[in-house]
Image 1 (tube, chains in turn brown, green):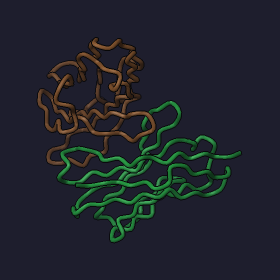
Image 2 (image 1 turned 120 degrees about the horizontal axis):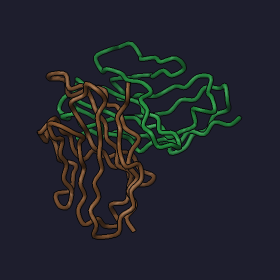
Image 3 (image 1 turned 135 degrees about the horizontal axis):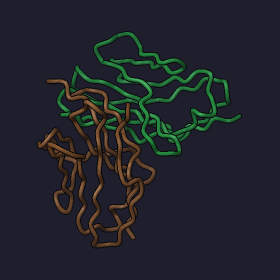
Image 4 (image 1 turned 90 degrees about the vertical axis):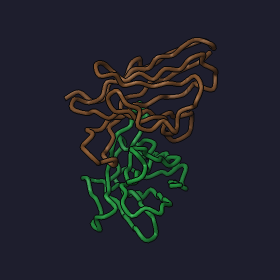
Length: 117
Length: 115
């Protein structure tokens, strides 16, 4: 029973380039969450998605960042024109998405470490 | 807004002994869940234990147990018979009924286990 998959595990980009981070939820899970962890800090919520819908993007910067979770395929977190301050670990989590339950346990992937040079 | 505070940046314990990690939170909600996650050097986030606020009984998972004091808004993690593999960063996290799936994390406590 595969867990949450994220790729790539490590990503190096130069300032101004685009970064695409992918997340495949656990089998049977329809809810995906993205978090960012800066060095020596806890995880900070970015965005919560269900299939084809963004439920809550209150933690995501308004510019340069976008997220999607299409009907088919993985969830994508996209960062355009990356800057050094975007260097962080980006974690994806998933949950089953049982109706009306916003407090389900979230299971995390291994994270993508983004380094912006 | 809800907040989670871990006041111990670092803790250490001798192998086979017991250690308690502290966590306090602030919320006006009555329906919420609390979690402890472990982040070893691999940086993978691993669920350790979960507590529903409506349950008075403290959650237990093998060597891990919590002391949930709802009135005091305290949620500490006790690790018994500590093992070298327990060395990691531990995060306390909160999710409430109004959070739309948003986990709120504390700053983390780094646990060192001494052989």
